[in-house]
Length: 83
Image (cartoon, rainbow, N blue to C red; front, side, top):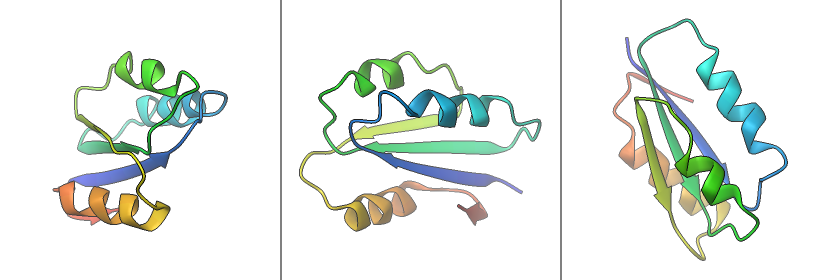
């Protein structure tokens, strides 16, 4: 079973590393990580670009609401379980 994890962020430089490290520490191998950034200007994008996770999909959207970003991530997910 494949699990899709969706992370939506905006200007999360101080906290996004905790989320990314949590995903990297998982033992389960069939994880897809979808990250939707809403147009960060604080350095979050640089952190995301350097994030080494082989099954990641990163999208940079501007001026989208939280809910449209979540829905966008759901549409991009290919897992059997989406969280």
